[in-house]
Length: 180
Image (cartoon, rainbow, N blue to C red; front, top):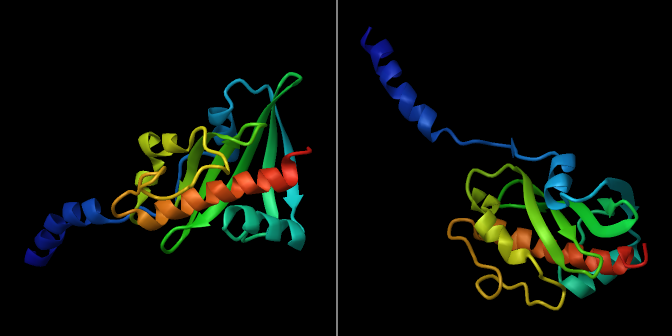
């Protein structure tokens, strides 16, 4: 009896501290529509990057392109090209963070959405107040934590890796998508 009562008393405490894993916030379609609300269509482009392109992306961004495949959509409003939506993964401390970046035709960030977060800490990268620091950034910007993108205490790896991922996607756009 006492053991059962003790277990019931602990249940609320355990429920409050149980970590959340793999929380999905947006599908690709929802993230695209959130970042390009005026788009009337999205054309899918599944990119397969060559070793030379991956090397160029690394040279421009300072960040390694981890995969040879990249999911990309061209956003249109009727006949007007609005930009690119690129879905990507970066590594947090232990698990991947799935995010989407909207890039303008001229190579600046329109916005970033965190689509799926699998870490137990660092979820503050989902905050709109932090993500807004990417808007307008281009490859010409330093992309340095605490310089042009704020670091988030207890989310340093997530902050750094999302920041580096966005910079890498800007390089990918310049290398592969500038003529598309």
